[in-house]
Structures are given as C-alpha cells and as structure tokens.
Amino acid sequence: DAGVTQSPTHLIKTRGQHVTLRCSPISGHKSVSWYQQVLGQGPQFIFQYYEKEERGRGNFPDRFSARQFPNYSSELNVNALLLGDSALYLCASSLPGADTQYFGPGTRLTVL
Amino acid sequence: KNQVEQSPQSLIILEGKNCTLQCNYTVSPFSNLRWYKQDTGRGPVSLTIMTFSENTKSNGRYTATLDADTKQSSLHITASQLSDSASYICVVSGVGGSQGNLIFGKGTKLSVKP
Image (cartoon, rainbow over the protein chains, first blue to last red):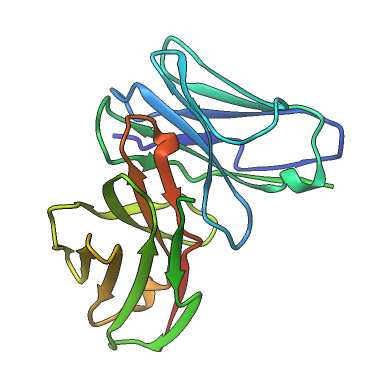
C-alpha cells in the first residue's frame, strides 16, 4: 500500500505569491493534519481535517487555509507568502481515533 | 505552558555504540508520549507510543522508557548503525482528540560515524 503522498516535493516562490500544497492520505485514513517544520525545529501544528471538516487549528495567521475533499485528500493554501514561510510542510494521516499518525515526505517550500 | 524539551540537541557516536536521548515535558493533562525518527528532508516515522501506564516499550534496537511522575522519557538505541543517523523527536499528546494537542520537541540530531 502507498503511504502518505505529497506534492510537489520542492517549491520555490517569491514574497507575496500564493502556494497550494497537496496531500493524499493512506487509503482508509479519514483524518489529515498539516504541520510546518522550520529548519532545526520540531513540526508545528497548522490544521487537522476529518470528514472534510476542520477539527483543529494551530496558531497560524489567516493567510493559511486548508480543505479536505470527498476522497479525503487535502490541500494547504498559503497566501501573501513571507520569507518566514520557508519550511518543510508535512502532512500526516491517521485512522479515526487512532494515536498513530503516518507522515508524508513533506514539501520543501522556499520563499525568496 | 505545555512544553517538550529534548536533550542533547545533537550527538555524535561511533557505529556499534549505545546511546540514550532524553525528553522532559510539562504537558498536562497527559495522554501519551511518542518517539519519532526523522531522516533529513523526510517525514517523521513513528518508533514507539506509550500511555501514562506504560513504563517501557521496545521496537527492535529502540527502547523507550517513561516516568509519568517525573514527566521524563528516554529513548535508548542499542548497537547503533549508520542508518540510525537522523533526528529523533519526542511528541507528547494532551488529552483530547485533536492532533492540535500534540506538542513536538525540537528533536535530537544523532550522527553515527563509522
């Protein structure tokens, strides 16, 4: 079975632009979470979606938004990019009520 | 404030040696504690999950311990291999179903040298 997949793997944008990152969870997983990991730091929680509804939101500005589709895949959108948005963006999926999250390989975003 | 502190920040050991990584937390109420291994540029991979009632859990050469009274955990790696070179992240979960209750440590970067 395929694990969590994310696209693109790498992305370079300039300040002020917007970006859309995509995530496909493991088959059967209905919960998807997004994390931002700045170099040298642990992941920071951004959003959790379950059954297409937002179930949790971290301390990130409104420039960050997300959604989940009927097939449980998810998109993370970031508007008006700042240099500080440069990071590895991780997506994780899990079964309902399960403690174990399975992470994707991440999307490396560089903002110039 | 809920926090997870890991030590050391980085560690270099020779192949075949053992090492122990530390994690102290202040998360309350506490649900479970996880250790993840993260290779450079990759997503974290779960090694162990322990609830407050578990003192130790093993996964091959990895053994995690938990002292819920002192709020400390350790990850012991036995007979290290070059492939163990990675960041090891301690994650503590507060009570509640949202993944937003997960508090991540900054990780310990382990380098195993031949």
